[in-house]
Length: 469
Image (cartoon, rainbow, N blue to C red; front, side, top):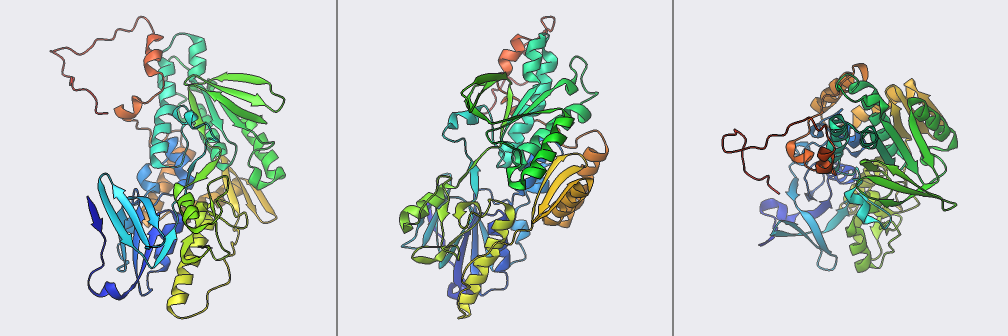
């Protein structure tokens, strides 16, 4: 089924701006056009604004997914010149100026006069996409919930086992990638084992869990410079996290990870729970646009833009955020936010008959990453801050960028529970998610032989209906 999206009424005479993606770039672009004489259509595959920097807290049970992923419709509901459409964008016809997007078999074609593309990036496995089955990334709410089930599920399965060696394998967590996400995930798994789960089990000792942080580079948090990288490494090691640098992941299955160093030495770590936090790949829409406009596409799938974030020969198309390759700008939220505002400003200047600004310039407001409870690192130009002060700065900045007062208050409450107390507010794992724990059936075979499992029968109160696939 196909539908041609048409404007009605007074809006037919307005300049049509289509924004693809409701992340930081797309949302800030749409909001910047609030008072402009334009018709804005925002298209997104989930129609949620995802605060991606806090996904790791959903994965480790600190925050709920709703706190960091409010509906784009709710955010923009007072912006009368803007409509939000659900759909996975599958094609952009740059000649006809039409965006095609679908929900199942329902296809919609939306025309545009100006286009802002901010579809973000996904996880890159550096040519080993088969690793995704064993080590989920952390780029979406679905990823975070799957990781939550795997992390908490690993402790649950370990509680079933009698064999100490099998327990060790289930209580070994390998995090691949020592950038901000990897460091934050590793730190929170360590704290989860040492604090939140400390008194919850009878057979296993959660604090005996092994957390390994692996990276192919020479330091962790490379973007923060050598000094902060070394300080962060020492802080993580003090927590009990093993740091393995100069190690490339060359193999992986449900039970283990194979690492190879630069001299070719191979070692295997037995671990059922793995997290992939290394590398990103731009949305396929970047290559699609590159093929149609002649713009170059780099190894990460990002499309090269003109200095003003437009594509060669198409001043009506802006590409922003993780999809754009310009001046080696990093793939961080601030670049997307500022790019979205810049694109909106350019469109408004054109409608006013003013000359375009010569180019987009990113203003670096600094970088932050948490190491553990009460400890973080912050880099703002030449200023480097570590410890509790950096952590307070991290709290303030992330609260300010959360959308909505209610979300901010809720987040503060969850942080108080997790950081001041010893528990996590969001530990729920559904039965469906538990089914996804790798090798769960094999683990049950190794469980305590004295346990008796009674299957449901005709007298049981349990439903015999098979789970939906």
